Length: 126
Image: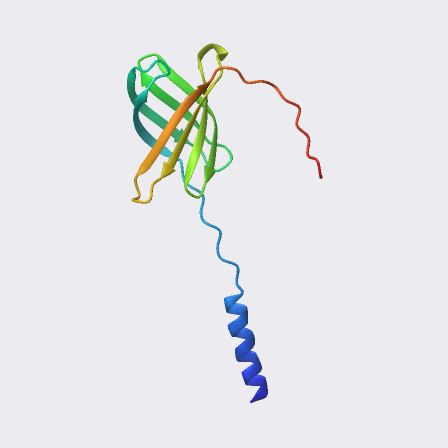
């Protein structure tokens, strides 16, 4: 009987000590529509299409004929994504943030970074 009680307690504690599952990352793949303003304040709308899989996403952001930005990076979290797209003629990058709101809809914002300053980065504690 003592062994049965011990086994029951062990199973109970083991079950409660199980690590919670990590939240699944946000899936950015698909075609997104947006409306916003350009960096001069003019209303624009268009599409953002993302393809690929975690770690190797790619795609385009289109805001009109001849206005297409190539997506270079997509970073995800459990609740959203950050998209980095190259501005035309090497003029910098556009950073787009998309997140899921409490009501299940999406919010977003963006901004251009006209100058990216190179940096040397090393891991302090390998």
